[in-house]
Length: 89
Image 1 (tube, rainbow, N blue to C red):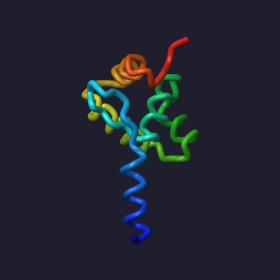
Image 2 (spheres, rainbow, N blue to C red; image 1 turned 30 degrees about the horizontal axis):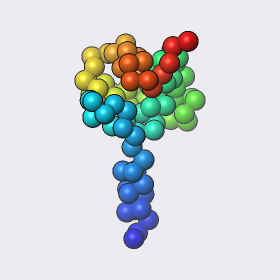
Image 3 (tube, one colour; image 1 turned 60 degrees about the vertical axis):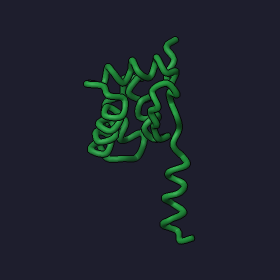
Image 4 (cartoon, one colour; image 1 turned 120 degrees about the vertical axis):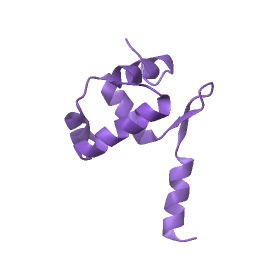
């Protein structure tokens, strides 16, 4: 198997099911972005923390919004709490 195929296979198997009832699958990176968003990080702060560009973070947030069918970032936070991705102390 070529390196390119191995990489793709790894990416496919690294997805994590967040909610069985909603059948939403988020990558580890998307889950990390959600956790930082719940901690009130800005897109710029997330970019620095994860070593990505601000535009990449904004694209990830857009992907998350589409996957969970939310209209805004508050919806992501609510989803994270309801699905135990992030716990409020």
